[in-house]
Length: 216
Image (tube, rainbow, N blue to C red; front, side):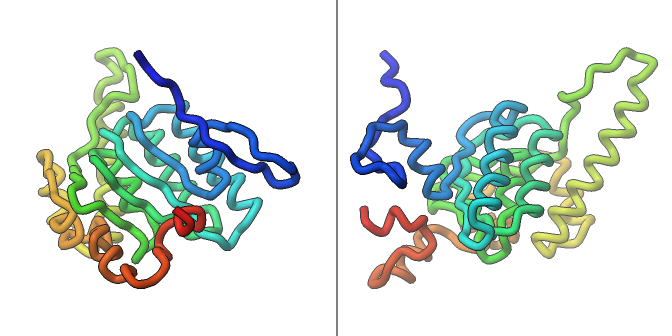
């Protein structure tokens, strides 16, 4: 039997007493977002809207995006990526579980030096597939041409942000490439493996986690 979204006590600024609110609302208020499903229009609008709102509310404090997603639509993934590059706060991207396909593209889009993978996370990249468009046979060539343009654009972004040559990334994207957290770091998809941060800050505050976690 599903338990629904967990609720926790939280005192909304301005209120005298705590109220029970769902967990994710508390996390959003602490600038912590979650991409924990397939990337589609609804979750994209949700995440991009929150990023813009949090940026307007506070343009300096970091935003944390936790990712556990099998990927999804190209256009939706690019919308999240572009929003991350547009808002003024730095975006931490943190992979736990899996970041596959467009989810790895979003993981890559975090602020350089602030892209993290948990020790047992898996990251997968591959070439984009045609799932967004619905074309009849006479229009098929136009769809292929558009897909080729998108593939080249995505490959260039991977190459730029990982430091890999374009041809290396292009060849790797010809097939599904699964990586461990350490392999993803070596490839340039992430900057830090989570246990490194824990070791580094074991005697200090966990500065790479949202402020609320310091009291846990």
